[in-house]
Amino acid sequence: MSEPPASADGDGPPPRKENRLVYRDPNASVAASQRLEQDERHPVLIFGSSDSGKSTLIMSIVNAIEKSGDDGSVGVGLSFGNSFYAKRDAKAEIQRELARTFFEADSTNFILGREKLETTQVRFPFFIPLDLRIKGSKLKPVKIAIIDGRGEWYEPHKTGTIPFKELQDDVIEVLRNYARGISVICAAPFSLGDTDQDNVSNSDAGLWAALSKYQELRSNADDDALLFLLTKWDQKANPGKDPDFTRLNGGDVVEIANGRYERSWNFFRTVSVGADDWEKRCFMQYSSCKFIEGKPNIPTELQPDFIRYARTVTNWIYGNARRFEFTIGRQVTELPLNLFPDVVPRGTRMVSLSERFLRRVVR
Image 1: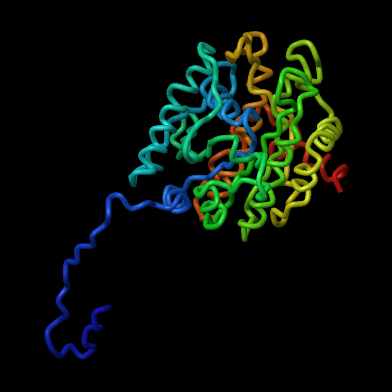
Image 2: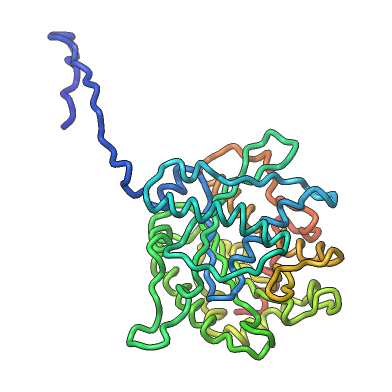
């Protein structure tokens, strides 16, 4: 109940101010969308089946950022975003430990290539908060949170009357309630095995279901951005030997995506993301690394090719996060729109992921 207003004519004693103590349950859960908005952090959702390359994608981005500046590129500092987990509850504590382990141990193992990478096995998704700051500047960091989780959540049921698995609660909550722009990456592996003949129909069906759920839950997608990523491209083009590994016509990507991921690709190219959708609906091929006996390996001579992929996707995420900052009225005009200019084709304002070509060939 609110207190009565003070008397306008000054009659009577002034109202007494009470010190009200509000009890807050330390174990109360904080909604993921609320955490993101309070921390002014841009969410990145990755849809993809088991072995689609979701975790290695994140690790390759960490690797590329950590190596920035060594080759004359912009130096970028990368740190774990502790502020995202400032408010703790039981679930957030578990997520924080998972994210810490991923950032410190798993990414290090990827960079050093000293252990085999296992598929992600967790009870629920976890947010990996990353702060990106341009080295040598006093500019504020751009903050993102990448959501990782089990690929099985994005696969159809093998038996039963319910065809598809439900998205996890945190993903549903963010899609429903996060008020600003979201980046969504569809990880579509070229192959799920050692040859290009391995079946990808489950991955295609899972991506289709995830995009369908995205469209159903996301009431306002005007500031969202979607990226269809044909991962594990090294299974199609041999790094260092096949020129298609790094120099590929957009039409070839479209042909492969349409042939292997007909359902999800067709959905992706038509799902609404508001105005200027050609700026926000992108696609490309991608390779995180080579694997030797299950261990990640990037030969020294091929580092630039692999890192270029990661920097391109990092630019895309960074640009989306910058749009998020504009929507809340922050004075961020001094920050560049692209983090790594060296991978931006000349004559383009945003990082080019074939959106102009997409306009011609997919509708």
